[in-house]
Amino acid sequence: MAEPVADSADSPASAQAAAPQDETSLVLADELEADNTDDNDVPRPVRIAAAWAWRFLVIAAAIAVVVLVVIQLRLIVIPLFIAVIVAALLSPLITLLVRHRWPRGLAIATAILGAIAVVGGLLWLAIWQITRDFREVRTRTVESFNDLRTALLQSPFGITETQLNDLISDVTRSVQEDGSALWSGALSIGTTLGHGVAGLFLALFCLLFVLIDGDGIWRWIVRLGPKKARPAIDGAGRAGWSTLTNYARTQILVASIDAFGIGLGAAILGVPLAIPIAVLVFLGSFVPIVGAVITGTIAAFIALVYNGWVVALIMIGVVLLVQQLEGHVLQPLLMGAAVKVHPLGVVLVVAAGSFLAGIPGALFAVPLAAMINVMTRYISSGAWRITSGTPLVFSDVLWQTVPAARRIRKPRAGRVSLSPAPSQHNTTDKVDPDA
Picture 1: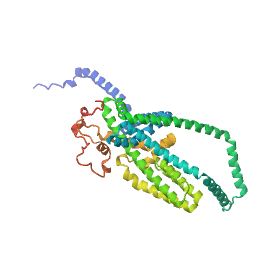
Picture 2 (picture 1 turned 180 degrees about the vertical axis):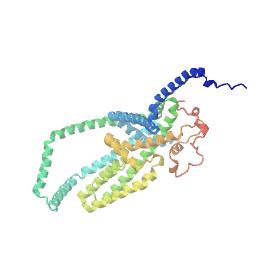
Picture 3 (picture 1 turned 90 degrees about the vertical axis):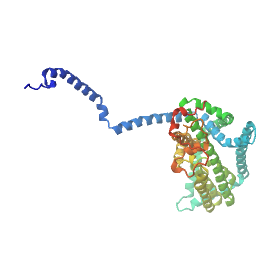
Picture 4 (picture 1 turned 45 degrees about the horizontal axis):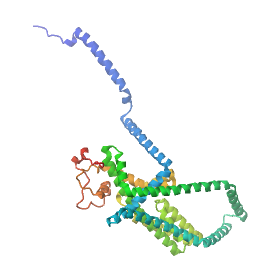
């Protein structure tokens, strides 16, 4: 019986032939393991966090550069922002006049002149009352100062007349010693006024062009973006414009109600300068939360100085009542869900805007935040992936940006749902606004 043939792998020749191949495989495996040593040493969560971190740093750097450029060009950017907000406020009126067969040029001129007349009338009314009551205000100021001086001398804090006179003398001496600083400050104020006049004319110039050829300007801006991204840019920009329009109209109405309520309360209580207080409240209402607090404090202080602490307490109650009416009734009722920003977000963006750009930053922080909010929601909702043949109702575009949990009503019957079907996500169906 023949012996079985031994396995070829066990033969010496086969072992000698396979030895170089095995050594080569081991060397390659060692090199591959050495190449992957760094990746294996770094845990996967750390690699993911690092990937997010460098992307976040790039985004933050881009935002910082944009903010820096805006701050450096504030003398141009601020008038442009003012023009855009005023245009958003006046555009519904212009559209209404054009719908009633007014020539568009005449409608624009009427809207602009009407706005200037309203603002100028309010300022003239406030200045007129201040001028008329100046003597009485000066007399009451002296009386209030004397009453305060007497109260301090009779207070249990042990303040003597000598200490009080020394304090007044120190304040007077500081003012005299800093006369040069005051003069330089006056010169800087004059420069600021010059910049303000130039900015006013620039804002009026921009306003005219935005109202006359706003669509053409926006189409030019859209064409600057990549062709595939133009539908998203166009839809997000139009959603942001609608949001800005709603915000401007709502703020005008809320500011008017605040000014009327607080001014009427001051007039009933006999507080002097009721009309200037109302105008100040109207202007301060455009800075949410912060403006209301400051203007309310000024109204209460004037009531304290001229009418005593009882009337001042009542005035504080009137201010708080009006602010509660605004915060719990007017804002939720008038401000649409798509443009609403959380109160914490309002406080943070107002604080950040005032820190970066002062009063203009506080004024523009909330509308910018509302626009960015609704534009981000619009892009993330995919509402821009609508075929060109689909009829589009723009209010439904805004409705699509509202989270489902916050929708308290359904779209009206007959309107198109903007939740695209799976076949509508094809990028070949995108609308090109440049077409």
